[in-house]
Image 1 (cartoon, protein in one colour):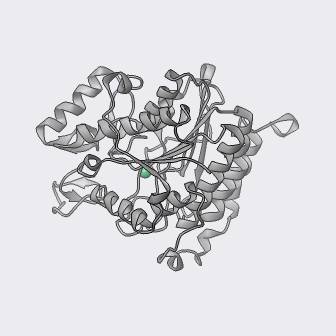
Image 2 (image 1 turned 30 degrees about the horizontal axis):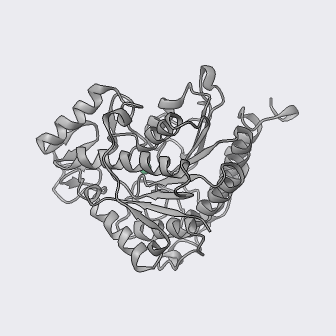
Image 3 (image 1 turned 180 degrees about the horizontal axis):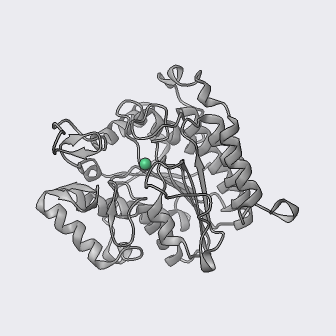
Length: 371
Ligand SMILES: [Zn+2]
């Protein structure tokens, strides 16, 4: 029986990029409505997990804010100062499309702190698996700049904190629909962190997350990008997991697995064009927990990232939470709207990406198969 921890904090629900529409703030042609990343939506997700009885399987932990030492594992001091100053003004952009309110700097510190503390607790054996329901998200944040809603790079900081705590090899899987350029940049030359990203080809950032980006120097081969074409769904994601992530992980032999578990690759998300359902996220979570049981003594930490469908995000978080707890896929009232669509099947153009990486990526290509 796994010991499970659930890290969340009220302040993370108080971060809000402010009035706007879609992902843009109020400006020419933009009437005030609400931006997608409104974090009270995350409180609704936690509410559904509680109502379904799934939260009863977890020990609830209220995280403390990350210290400067934690944040400086990845970021430069000037970056911390910029985030704090923008938030102190109560509004504005802390970087590139990284809008903040009065609570954002504290929320971002707590989000990063949750990930550091969850990772440390799992490494110490206090828990086997942890889930961090945090905002703002992190995977676009680079060492020296906030980007696309992300202020501090929660997962990258957690990976560095794990190394500070004594483990060497960390596998980071990022299944957010966007490419995690900030995580990639942090570890691009690091041989001890294998960064795998499954994302929508060419979505965001532009020209980021190509199959040809595989690491540099000592980190050569330690970045594995899986840019699936728009319209990819259940079978394409599970093929990427079983045919790319799992074999690469077995070659790499991590001591800890971190998952940047955004839910914006769903078929109802306004920020991506993918087709995943709650069943996809449940199955991927089950697969990653099994991989952790096989390779890392069960040690795995899931961290929330993107997710912009106000109505579907709670169901997706519930599916991940249930899978971590070893429970079957929960009821999904929206499943009927997605599961019959042709995008759920593995299509040739999706298969080709998987086959290309199987044949050519340094962590996968072997013997006569590499050309
Ligand atoms: Zn995203």
